[in-house]
Image 1 (cartoon, one colour):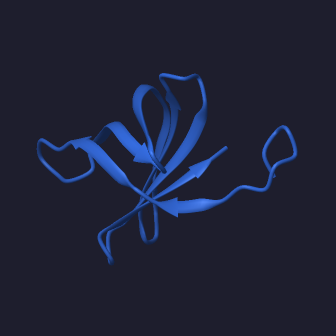
Image 2: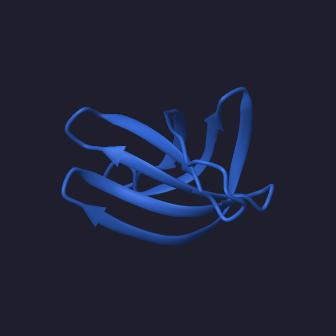
Length: 80
């Protein structure tokens, strides 16, 4: 559940990344539904057994978790 009591829903999305020496090094923007968000701040980044995770603050001040599945090469977006 989100802070205001809404259920969290993960959806597949399109993420723009900065990728210098490896893919998905730093997310810079993403499409979620019909909306486009810029990443204003990366709050945290970590490795998970199936890929990379980023907790980000969008330019709208909303928080999202961006998950990259390295096995299936898919991004999932979760609004926090």
